[in-house]
Length: 62
Image (cartoon, rainbow, N blue to C red; front, top):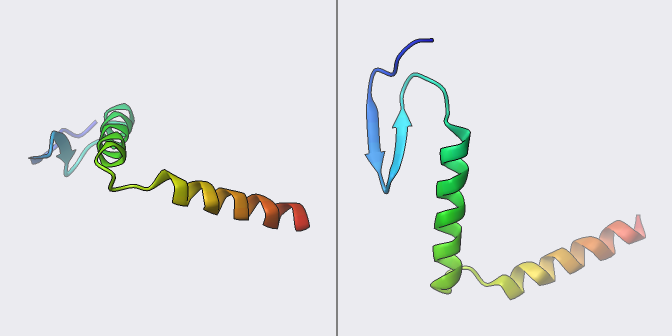
């Protein structure tokens, strides 16, 4: 496997220009970011519940 040429660090995430994507690290950081946004009120869960209900109704009609 080729070693990364450059590594960038931003907001706790490490991005390798050449190399494998560390899926576990990416998923952990993604969940951490989303949790912070939910706690800060940046993501409205009620809005997503409405979207899911509408999608469920649409699926039942089909």
